[in-house]
Image 1: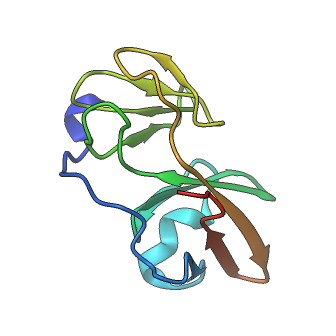
Image 2: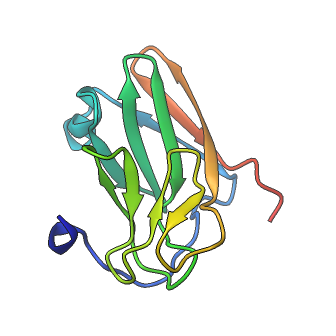
Length: 121
């Protein structure tokens, strides 16, 4: 599982207006149509958890800056660099990381998700 997770360098939430929209019906976002599906977009990992629940976090591990992956079987976010794991509230639950992941607000209207960074940083 860890071998399939992409590793990258540090990057932030990229939109200057601190929010962006995703059309779930767009073929490039097709993974979000199924429960457990996830995509990377604009510095975030967006995960479809239940029919009405989507979560979004910074895809950057707080320890080493690697790109996080989602493990659908354990419902955790996983860092492939130091085997850090985070729960779906963004809390570090195992491995080296101690700081939580940055979480973004997700709202849905029709087929469109709006992901907003309401963090003060």
